[in-house]
Length: 621
Ligand code: S6P
Figure: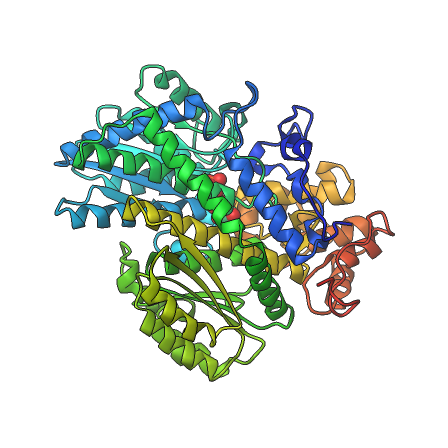
């Protein structure tokens, strides 16, 4: 059992690098040995495990197997790409830098392009950055997994974004080197080298890029990568793909994948800006220094173990009671709250009401391509005013409200909101970044602290650069919120070992992940697992030729309207019962759709007892 004295040994940090460790899986899909027992760990241990996982991002290169973030080759490529961005900045006429991705990768593309276009505006320069997210702007705030599978859609959206441009630096982000949407865009760039220079950012080695055929295409992600590798020799294409180690929750690339994307691309764009506007040449040393600043950000953030643990426990309690977690943020930190909240839906099968983010200024602050999205429904109401009207009246002490802000935000506005929230719930907490020596804010903060049950304050040294400080605040906030939402769902019992079992099967990557998980947990052959999954998706006890002859796209489109397909398939595989019976067994389970103790009973104790839910025994915190 993972007790309160969890420590991470050096060999556990590196175990995943062994060639024998889950050899059939790419790094981004492997299960991390560090978090094997995260489902039964105490809140404090969860925080330590997440810290150790994140620290893997900055591990030094040890052998030839994996390139690492701080490794020679990666830093060299970052230097080259920064110089390409610099060329665009020097001559922005008819040029564009496009960042594109699906899910979290698209959200990071949005966040980064917004920040650097803002920096250009402040310098009275025209914007040169543009983002694309699969599924359009609604995907910034909600789960849109299906467009990820469409290479043609990717290609068309790139073409549209670049209409009339003569020179485009295209940066495609796919953490797993797997998204067909991005593969379609990269292929398009390779076909039009006179305009496009492609850059791929991801976190698997090239030979682990996905090799499955894609609908209507003659290429696979891997074949695109191979063509890029060839062109990389003459710097006509670039690959930035260090390994950062498996995710804490298997395949959850919103965590390290998202963080490493943010780090890499901010380093690239910052270096290009410094070279263009302050005559600071792009150098290997400068790039490395910036990356090290992010490593320090990690240390500084996780130095707050007790504060993070308190937040995680409070959020876990709220979710266990079926109540809400609300992030109330200011500036770009609020966007990280919106993003973290939206990712809980596909990652943990959460309801959109469970974890929500709100931003001061609403869509004005977001400044997204498509403008306000309020017409899409209440889950797209993101302003603080919306929170005050729609959410606040129904809050009670079991709901947790987390204020996320910095000393450069309007602290009196934060205090005013805090007072309003306190009228409904005492379960008010804060994450606050400030700069060393800011005494005025410190005094104000003292009064404010009295309103909050807990206050996680991080004091940063006076910065050499305001923009670097801001990027550090953002990364720190991302790590904190990822830890809170992941930890809270772990405490809720949503995770088995380090796998999310109730995974939504809404695209081909998730379909393959689901089949693999069924295989791992049932021990049945792959063909039988896929059959069980299809039966659950189509709600039948016998598969017809009509079903088996359909392609994965049809399966995933059908699965969109189903719930609990993986747990249902697992019950069927383990017990041999019918779907109807499996459904009633799952319904008998209190509180959660599915949780580990149920799995133990089903499999006749073939698994060790794991976290018990609040109904079966007190949670271990
Ligand atoms: C992962 C997140 C997903 C991914 C998306 C893109 O935690 O829920 O939405 O971001 O599938 O993945 P990738 O590998 O192309 O960056």
